[in-house]
Length: 467
Ligand SMILES: *Cc1c(COP(=O)(O)O)cnc(C)c1O
Image 1 (cartoon, rainbow, N blue to C red):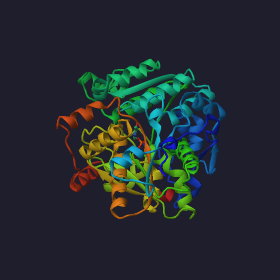
Image 2 (cartoon, helix red, strand yellow):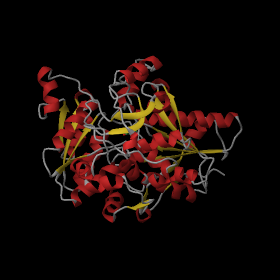
Image 3 (cartoon, helix red, strand yellow):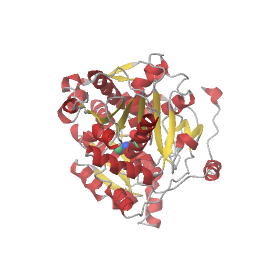
Image 4 (cartoon, helix red, strand yellow):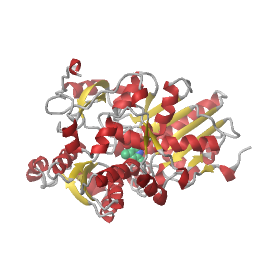
């Protein structure tokens, strides 16, 4: 019997998980190190600590299977937005003609956070560790603005100064995000700016330069290195960010059990750098690796315009265009690759988390891709059925979930599908407007263009025998 009155599954604040899941000791093949972009050698500990808060550097390589979540972080979660609800998507199921309990769709609703996405899960943790270390500011870049708003909020909780370099194109296009960040007392600069050497070269030639994520990263790293009380902060890709996001999957596990589900058959999430997908699926992936739930199907969804895992190659590459960010071994389209201007700004990254790459290579997860028009169409279907308009990034997961549910219905299969609702689309309504007015364009990335990007990339040559 379908029970509408128990279709949203809540936890009490005192049930907020006490540990993050660290997948590193359970990976089927060993983690690859982050390398110094200057010489291609593993970055020494002291050097990494000059860039990131020290505790994050330690977590990046920790072999502890479970890492305690400090109580101060749990307290901030408790008084602001965690635990987040797990919804049985009854409205969506009905809109797909699915009745009864044979096919069940659940989503973990990370859109209820103060800035509307999962990003504060790591922002709060990074701000806490920075404060505890006696630092005074965190510097970062933001493309679409979701990470910048998340970190601004995190810093505001610990009285830290937050400085955000925002890609000028979105600085102009998304005034709402900029105002939100400034409301949390962040200092927001359009990038390229005149405040750093990396930005100045471009700014002085053209003050209206649209900027790029690669450039904004370079400015943020440079700015953070100026003061020994400042550090650089990252919102995705690296191990410690995925670690902080596992609170999502930890909560979902408890909630599913409360809802009478021992384990889902399928887990779906959209992939930009891999943090919301990783956060939801890693606690389940550990059980899959260890043979507890060998059959669980784990699917990451990419835009067809930027398919790092589906069409990229697995190799060493720079984290940013300007070659200032660390070199990582990952699925990549090449660090000079500039994706088409799709609306899912958070999915326009040339690489992916090394953790996701390793799990993909070992067949623990698989990747699929979709066009942005079908994605936004799925977003509208979801909004009508469930009442929340998804961020364009998140709508990629919605699209794949709908496809999988319909496939199971056709085949008369029983299936429990869990997906991550990574964020709402209140700041991204332009994508929906363009869909409605027929102005949304699909971009496919042809294989020869990928080859071109990879060949033109001056890709780093790394001698792996050195580790
Ligand atoms: C940033 C963002 C993403 C993409 O980043 P991941 O690190 O891959 O999670 C996806 N959805 C939303 C709502 C985001 O803000």
